[in-house]
Amino acid sequence: MGSEGQMIGYELIKTGSLVSFRIVEEEVLAAPDEAEFGTRLLLRFVAEQSEDDQDEDDVAEDTVEWGAFGFMSVLGVLSFAEARSRNIICRLS
Image (cartoon, rainbow, N blue to C red; front, side, top):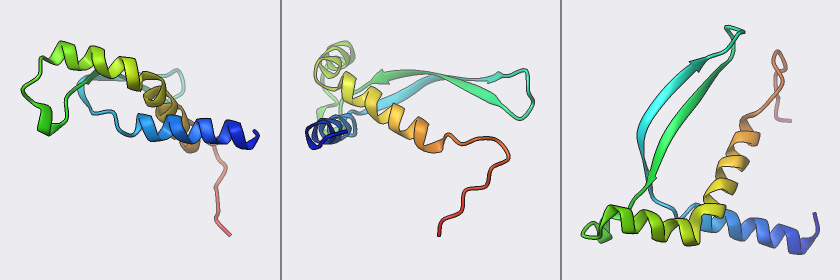
């Protein structure tokens, strides 16, 4: 990835980290292998504490307009950062 691509990635992460949300519902999903599982979350974009007087639906809609791609990018980065092959121990040198 070139420097322009890196800058775009950094901007997406910066934007995504500004999004406020709350977990509405969570579900742990079993997998065929007992060592694995999945999680399904229902998230809701919410106002920051200083903006609590706004309508929740309006806040969610506004947040989607400016923060959705950044938020998804942050989730992707965190997901891949935690991914590692089973039975492989990662050691920092």
